Image (cartoon, rainbow, N blue to C red; front, side, top):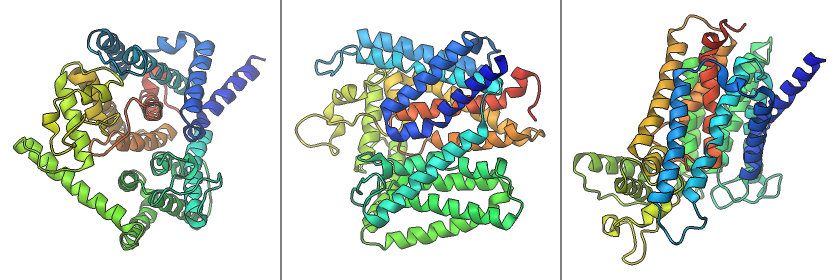
Length: 443
């Protein structure tokens, strides 16, 4: 009876984890509901046992980070956030405390890993499969003028099942890697030629869907992921080499297509301008390059300079940014009116600095660098290779690309991004520390 009950709990918990990519597609309300159910279910089942296992250095760093975010929210909300046009009273405090749900998500998932609750076969199939389905939906939208849900394209950018949100490329890029790892780890095909064919077709569909989505940064990140897969999976090197050749052929083709040519040529032009901006900023402090992305970066840096040590608090960026000295933004804004800032500066690290200050940024960097160090040591200097070792590769590649500093991003504190980051982190830490905590290596 007890075994049946435990199996039922395992089944439900794995179903909740496997449904996360569907929740990302369904929207923030469903995603938050899914996360809250995982947290509550885990806390009811395991209670304080979740926090009683031996704390790793990463656990301590994450606990310090979340404690700082909560304290920062209290202090900034009552002492440093005085704007009359705020849509919600005590918004900084509310957002800071609500962010604490990711602290519980981290420890619940890590506990499930240490106690062998996670069905990786189901999880990888769901994560990678949803990425493939979104890619197919984007391709259908491109061919037929609408996707299977009836959503129509928005100019040169295709949204697939996301409707008005143009984030299909980002979704595909984030989750696709779990499908090839599913084939490698769990889907045993005796004939290598069949495996190679299925794998190649899958990567081509993922690749085409990402390009057609029109999201340019995900295309670049996808290529970085291919490069990392080339390093970490020897079996896939021949196939990945073919994909790289197809990638350059596709980009050359798109550059000369009337509907795509301006989109991708502008990306190349503005990327060069951002590089020039970085050089100017570092060497002479004068900014001559003007484009919308540079404006967002510059506004983020100027907002951070308003409160360098502790920032303005979570979700405070748009108000603090609009209050900066507009003379510093001349050349980016109209002669009259406000600075007209975005909701965030489109870079994780600049946003963290602006909202949590240098202290918060240093804490986040400590967490990331510590995890990178542990993962690299495990992957490159450990002689033990097992399923956990292979599974870790997938999560590590995704994490490495997600925290890549030289890219434009959404908000670090948004529901979708924070859920994704704190969903990935416990898997990396749990898989690395598995033997240390449980006392034995998995089979």
